[in-house]
Picture (cartoon, rainbow over the protein chains, first blue to last red):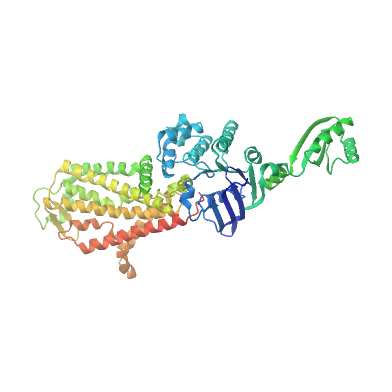
Length: 304
Length: 279
């Protein structure tokens, strides 16, 4: 069943002087999606998010949110969005509770202490409600950022690198919170990240952008499982293994050998066949590791 | 929504330590002037009127609460602009420095409302500051020195009767608010232009100093345009202490100061509405 589009971006472009930060970007996010927005640093993720939140105006192109033009319905749309944009900055001289109270009020809420405490509890900051934000660590500010994004119960949540600065436990908690927001409350989540495994764990759809343009978009499952894997077998006799593999014609693309490793391109289904084949021919296998082509690709653009 | 944003902005102003610097400075400055005048006032007054004493005979004392309040009001040109700019210059630039534009401008409130609410909050702060100054300088001075005639020496000598003074102070403080609102507006405009809080304060004070120097020059075209400089009108509150109040000059000053304030607000609005938030 086709779900309603929540965000539709068409031919979006942003120029800063001669520099093209975002160029001809198209994407669609559907209701209930956890949409991964991936790209290396400087790819144009934050610029796109700022345009989505009307913090900066596009040079050209269209943004529709909830089926309405953002340019013409800014306030109506922003009332239904909660967001974290880059660093979690707050009024440092105010307490966590005061910050949330002010921001809730600006979102049009008749703000009550119970609501503020509920939001703080959701991110594990209830016991620090009355502490000034200047005493918070980066991770705590990041949590408070999530609380302010949720306080007005938005339908669409835009999270720009929400796990930055969090410890592993914090990362896991935020991941679980995002999944809960989708499963229990059917929220749509637009999650920007430069970490593929983070998106892989929670998103159902994703786009990878680089230099301001979308490179690849689709379902996370399809994208991560399509194509070949680069598989490395750690074996005791690489020369003999290579010969056997050649003769067997099990492998479409042999990439080479190192001292103890055989490297080859295989489909996921062929890994087991290949393993059995080597074991049947008395080759001892110490380990098998695989890298997906998408991951390799993402790493290559990230590194570049 | 405007009132909600205004109340938030006022709460923010009064949650910041820097907002109390102005009140603190006035609370220290005014009693210092009063203490100095209490102990040495008569000697100062004699020294000041030394030339006049050869032509006029003075009986009694002119050192009273009204004279002290009048002296304190002179600081409107020098000290108070700095105190006002300290807060007004931070209203928008402070959001950029703190990265909180992102929080504020992603809420369903138009940028116009946010800018107007911030501007009104800066004006209310200015009014509060002048009100505090009037309470301390007038109230405390009257308590310490008592009332009396007001002796003013400018281009002419004016002696105002005791029952003819209070209403003049009322209007003078009102005009002082307009003067300082203009300074606040200019600091506010600079605050929209830059992304640090020191810049607008420094720029506002630099403008006041440069315009004051230019106002003192009588050469060439400057003579023709200097009446348009706001610094020329910041001390027009003094006109309320002339025997016959020159309403035409007060109206001109009101227009010039009001014009500067409105123009500054409109420029700030234009900048913020068009601004790409990159901080």
